[in-house]
Amino acid sequence: MTGVKKLADFQDRFFNVVKEKSTKLLKGNIAEELASGKDFPVSLKADFSLLIGEINALAETRNMFKGIMVELKSDFNDLLKSKNYDEFTDNFTDLVQIDQLRRLPGVLRGIVHMEIGLTLSFVAATKNLQGFRIEEYEHSFNQYFFSKDGYKTVSGNLITRPQLPKIGGLEDIKALGNRIDAERYIRDMTRIIVETSGDKLYDLRRRYGDFVATYHGESKKKLIDWFDSFGDLAEASLLPVIEGIISGAFSFQLNPLIAAAIGTFCSVTTRKATEHSYLTLLGIS
Image (cartoon, helix red, strand yellow):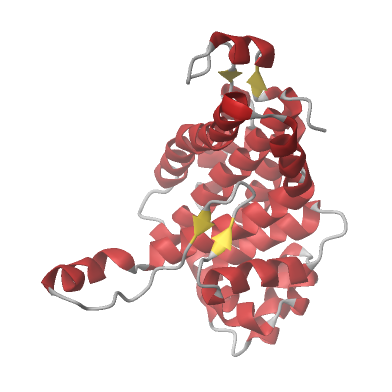
């Protein structure tokens, strides 16, 4: 199962390079921004080429995947044939040397058993977070699936599960097909894993509270808006590049859900590092 292991190693390497370069992603002068009176940044610069240009995991993607596609498909099929979640974790743990997956709560087991992309994201989290607690991920997913509002990010944005609409007319029926699909679920759940991991790695929830308490008036509103804006910029910069490289690395079509999971993992990992970089720039340690 070297195919799956290479995917796990790829995400692990990406996670670590992003963490290493996280404080260098944004540069600029906050005092100059506040004095400018403008709604857009005049001095803050985002440099995501630090990741695109230097990260070996991206540069070597083609060679990493070359010639392993058949084996990769076989690996996935073997894992999914596991008769139950315990058998699945035994097979996967032997492959990537992660035993925390054995403690995954029941609410998550069936999903992870069926979607390898989510398992890969958990592997990166468990290997790189000190004091890792699987219960934190259970809480995040319970919000997503069972809370009326959905999962709330550090800045208060909501990730809500796709739902069957209440049918009140023809337009509602037409909207049905746009609300639920497999890729949406996979991207949402991968995002939640990475959001939860990033919040813990960079202590973002406490620091964001300190940030909100530090500023007042128009300055506060502008800087809060920019917190999400720079995160959006990070994802917009990385997602097309990463998914393009991954898709181009295969001689025939990769399972699009695996590509979606990997692309979302990498882009949201960069978002969380950018949020950390932004708060560091504002002096919120």
